[in-house]
Length: 241
Image 1 (cartoon, rainbow, N blue to C red):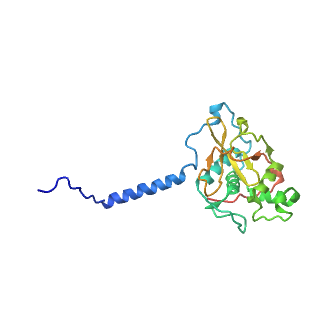
Image 2 (cartoon, one colour):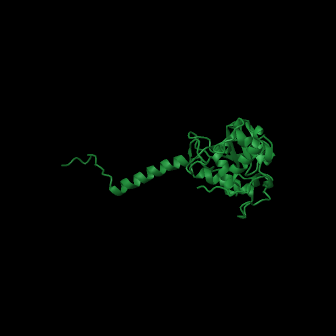
Image 3 (cartoon, rainbow, N blue to C red):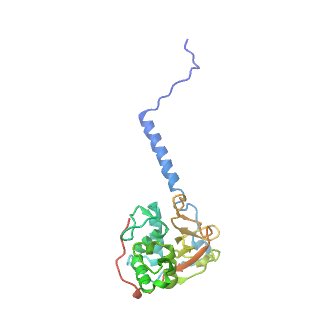
């Protein structure tokens, strides 16, 4: 009589094998996306904070500039560009590459602004205000250096509090610099304590792109984009994505 306790051999059918591969691959993709945008968050409304809207709608899409800049930053980080710092002839990196400063010009492009041309024009007219150029402007890279973006925003925008605990003063679309090495855009999402989230791209080893990050490093600048555009070239923003 056959031994009824003998173990049965299992064979994985081709269909089941395909399903297993899909599940595993999906898990890997999901793990890569974890932290790209927050799952649990609060909004200004939860804290009785009035959201400040720009009086300008540069690209005429019915969305004010501050909101447009914030949404553009979010769109950029959700494309998951590879973190790569390099010098590009013409200035712009490929769409699938970028560093923290590329979040900024792409966000501004979505709102209808050519940030590169604005920065280049201000540097050309005021080179001494930009120590990082060492007196030799380079349009191929200047607008992608935080050390140049910070003085540009300091010179041309409203400077605001550097205290993340002053929660009402941190508004969607605000620009934040950390030293001369990092930069990001304020989100419309907040922590349970009301601290604003940051939309940024901080490197290959850091998957989070929209997160509670204002306490990660010393803040060197907090700006709101209210530039008098009559002082700058009215050029078409670059297309990306």
